[in-house]
Image (cartoon, rainbow, N blue to C red; front, top):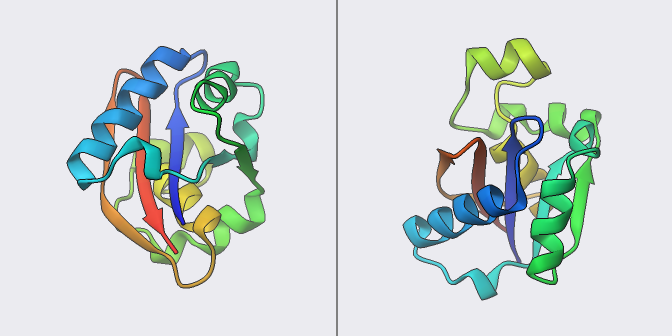
Length: 124
């Protein structure tokens, strides 16, 4: 299973989210068709761009609860002090990807940030 984890600025468009997803897939050396699901933290539930991007690809969007996001923070490699101040998590996209892919998952490549969104890939 390959999971794309996302973080984004408020109001980020589905076009921007898909663009960063494609860039992340390209840099990880994987095909977009290999992605099993999109994951994002539960506090992003109101971001319609995330839901629309997942729907465009025919993928489910799984919202990761705060407790699960917190539980995987020790496994993330990229942290942001700014994101930590805003969200309480040092990593959003990587944590969402790792949590969505489950126990024993691993990050496929460094996270990508562009056009107001961040994407990380994890594999179970």
